[in-house]
Image (cartoon, rainbow, N blue to C red):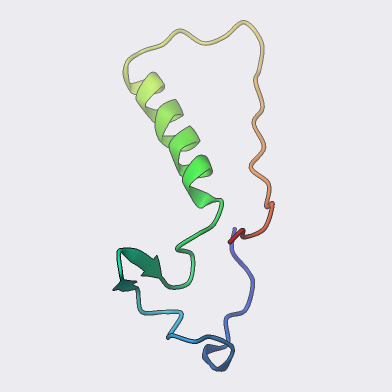
Length: 70
């Protein structure tokens, strides 16, 4: 889902090396929208593993990019 180019010259720190400073995490993807999608997928996998009966209709969920924030 992340296709935005990250040029190291545009960053104050190396975007590909996670760095913790003063309790904050810096690096590419440290603040973005992927957690919500990951939790949704993990929840569906767990529900299927527990044998939750299928819904009477097909349910579609769409993960869409809203952009990085912060």
